Length: 193
Image 1 (spheres, rainbow, N blue to C red):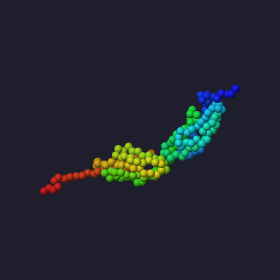
Image 2: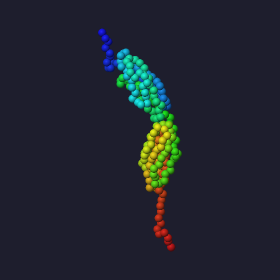
Image 3: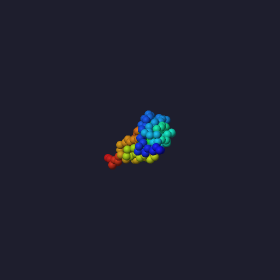
Image 4: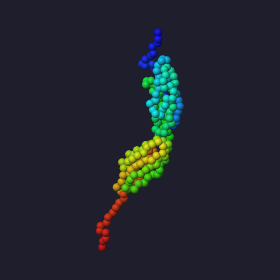
């Protein structure tokens, strides 16, 4: 009499370890063990993230090992991904942020009252995006991995006073100052006896 294979509901899978935490965005080649409640429990493994690749143990039955690689991160924030085993249990990978550094060209920007279009050179090895909450600054284009250029527009400043605004490159602040339009005076009459 042939033994019946356990149904998916009867299979219990546990992972050892159930997760991993990688520091400083470093790459890694690792593995984890899948413990199955029966020798004919299916244990397909797949990654849900482009930066995690399953290198062996993608298919099989019963207990076994799943190997994977994690790409080095160029992100300034931590990230989390999973490897799903049989769509019932997840192995969690958490990777710390890459220690990003930035250089800006020009180092700071002073803008005349009429405003206009400007560019900012950004030197980094990280993936970056730009944003601003300053209402008179507008981001036109920019964001990439590594060195790049940000294009932005400064609106005219019709007020007397100078103003300061900022652009956020990931978690780094780039500040700029726009001069005020100044004061104009008229005298009437131009001469007097």
